[in-house]
Each structure stands twice: as structure tokens, then as C-alpha cells.
Length: 434
Image (cartoon, rainbow, N blue to C red; front, side, top):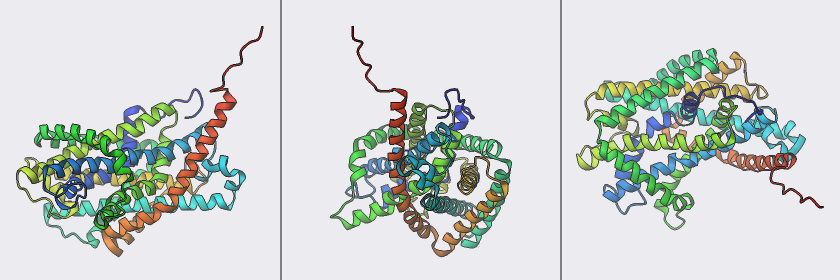
């Protein structure tokens, strides 16, 4: 992606760390133990009843389904299309610029502006929702550990403090702030992962990881098209979980796609597709197998009642049952905070790009302005309805951009087919006549 001699700006480990920090981050920590426990002990339409061995198997495969290839395929489509047009054809780093092959010059007028505005709205809501989740879980961890009340006012204090921190990071720029924090994120995440893996039920984790990958691929087609038209309860579950997640990924796609495209300059399309689809998905599967598997093991085999805890407290409830639980909990709060900072920092950078004509170096003032607006939006959503407001707003934001994503994919295929013909790729050479 770029010229023939283009070299990657970031080494591979840093690149993967930046992909992962921007693409999942807070969500993995928030739902790492909570989602598998929810599917195992509270609601699971795929098992006849909750709390059974079948419910364990279904809980992990459904979690993999929600956090696996679907999410990264959505990010990857947007990122690949933007990177191709931006770095290969020197077009602005805007969503509208990727639709030129379909709509021509009209993308440079009001229609293009409308598309870019829709992308900005989806990005603001997507990032703000994630920041809201982060604030809720930091508050939940502090409440679980130190009896600090869980309230909107506490979340306001948390968001204010973290806003100051990510503005400092945004001021230092992409090559320093986000790069350094992404590496810190990965170090903290790996340390937390290995602590849990070693002190938790290691063999159970490994067995769940292996079996759940098989179950995931086996049931992938069925789960992808399952809408339960005849079962209201199951349809409600699908809307609350699967549709919500897909909406989350789509709402995040402009932000994550633009960011991934920016940091992937110089990578081949083959390397890009494989890395973006496979590597983060496998990391996510390992994460959920470790934290979700440990949570299920505690509840199923040892009778620990984790499912009665608030969603944002479940991870800390898991840690409390092991040595170094306090240390692990503090490390988790720190990790959520650094993920919060990188998500917000990346968001301000991308929104700055989108509102300055696709510039790769948006001004500091515009980034700081977007930082304040993102935090204010997160606070407004939390104030008006907490987690439910965050989820509902995400679904609304995703719908218009899903149509734009489809058009982007068609535009990319048209452009790459045209370039292939111009380069003579795929043509059958004519036989020489004597």
C-alpha cells in the first residue's frame, strides 16, 4: 500500500500493538470475563439451559463469534480501501475520496461532504461510547476494591482526569504519544494475561481455547445468518448482543479504518489482510479463553457467584479469588486507563484528519477540540442513560455507515480491476503467428 519502494513506518510488533489498541482495547478488558459468564450463567439461547457443560461450550464459541473475524473484517475493509486510494492513488484520507470510482466528481461536492459528515458522526458516537464503557469499568473496579461509590459524578471525575492525559498524548503526535502508549498497552496486557494464565486453571484454559476455536468455525455460518424469526426471546438476545456488537464495529469502522490505514503504509495487501484478520482475532480468542475461561471455571466448578456481580465488576471478582488479586486489579485499572487514552488519542487524530480535508498532520488545536467533544459526548450519554444509552446510540450510528461500507467495497473492486487491466495483469498473452 503505497509506491513500489514504500517502506513501513512502524516495525511489525509496534504495528500490531497499534492495531490491537485502536481496534479492541477497552472492550476486551470490559467484556473479557463478563461476556462468557453472561452466556454461561444468565442468558444463552444456544444451550437448552444455563449453567451446564453445554452452556460452557456455547458461551465461549459465541464470545469468539462476537469478537473474531467479523469485527476485524469490518475494520479491514475500510482500512484497506482507504489505504489503497490514499497511498496508491494519492487521494485525500477521507471516506468520500474512496467512492470516486463509483460517483466521480460528485464526491468533491455536497454529496461527498454529506458522506464525510456521516463518517464523523459515526466516529464520534463510536469512540464516545467506548470511552463511556472505560469510565464505567474504572469506576466499577474502584468501587469493588475500595468501596468508592459507582455514580455518574465519579465517572465525570474519571473522564476529566483521563481527558487531560490523552490531550497530553495527542499533543506529542502520532509517532510518540500513540506509539509509546500502544507499546505500554501491549506490555501491560501481556503481563496481565500471563498472570491470569499461570495462576488460573491453565489446562482448562488451553482446552477451552482449542475446543472453542473448532466450535467457532463449525458454527460460524449458522451464527452469522441466525435471526430467529419465530422465537421472540432469542431474537431479543440477538439484538442485545450480536446486533449491538456488529453496530459497535461498524460505528468504529471509520475511526479504526482510517487509523489502521494510516499506520499500515508500506505494507503489502497480502500481509495487511492476513495480519488484520488473523492476528488480532487469535489474540482476542486467547484473552477470552483465559479470563472468560477462568471466570466460568470459578462459577461452575468452585461455586463462586460471579454472575450476580455488576458487569463492570466481574473481572475484579475473578481476580479477588486468586493470590496477587489486588495487584492484578490495579494493573487492570491501569490497562483500561491506557487503552482509554490510546482510543481517545487515536480518535482525536482521526477526527482531525476527517475535518481538515484528510490531512495526515491535523493541527493541535483541532485535535484538542475533538478531545473535549469526545469526552463531553461520553458524559452526556452516561448522564442520560448509562450503558443502555451507550448501546442504543451505537446501533443508530451504525446503520447509515453500513451502506457506505458496501459502496466502498464495490468502489475498491472497480478501481483495482481497472488498475489490473492497465498493468496487463490477468490478460492471456496472444500466441505468436509464424
